Length: 416
Image (tube, rainbow, N blue to C red; front, side):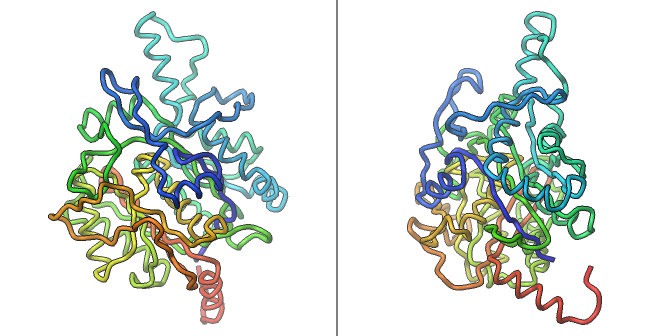
């Protein structure tokens, strides 16, 4: 069953808001990736920080401040009109909030703990709730005055994508009539030092699928959708045709080398969308620029798309946004299919152009490559995480979703 992503609010290293992000995305703008000191001792790291001022947080008694919630609020304010209209239409108790995150407010909490280690006591403003993984979803629900299901998902780098799948499941089960879903993560010393300890972080801008790739860059951002069973009148809607998830459980941090788990997720997504691999017009790669992940994904993509598919990784433009990555990259697919892309451009793959000869060759998108005007259009987005956690999502323009709905209506029998 397709669901509809009726509205989108987002921010990342490319900018704040759909207009700014789309302009930079299709231009292949990497200027948001900048070297910064202070995250890891005695080392400058290239990170993707959200530019500009963020909105002040409202005074909610159970929600201590965090940059993570500011990023989330900025995304929500962009679509506040649509969110308030949905509340009026469906009722506060029939709207759920499902968000992916991996950092929540741990950056602010860790500063308080550092103060404790130096001074022997926690600052007066410290509140453990600040770092709870549930904090972003709870904050958004309380800010909007909702009483429907509300939870956060933390499955590492698939969190944002899994939030969309969970939202779709809630709608399918009739638990609610609309879901505010997506992902949010802020830059954080804990994660930057953790990945640095794993020797997985590059000091320079990352180069996905290059023979010279040397690791990831970390970024931050938020993407927020309003998902419903049907396209809302007057909205800019994109269809989520379906998704697939798998867990190969190969290793706590390394992916399964042959990519069988990633292949399974992509095959399940194709089956859920009732389409073939040849019908995918573009693939947003997970593309982290680590040795193992890029090798695995190259093999998996070759297996699913033996004839090739236009593809690119956006992480050289925004960094790896961890718990927000799956939602942000689904948002980029939304932008490709939307009115914010009048020239029908695809996001270019930004790297040094030096392919790894040991990996299967991919059809990496060059600048000014266009999707074309054919309809319907179908896009896939991959997210792969620690522990062998894999998710693929398929988005499409409304024409295909409407055709699927008509097909289901014509078929005999019940449809769950």
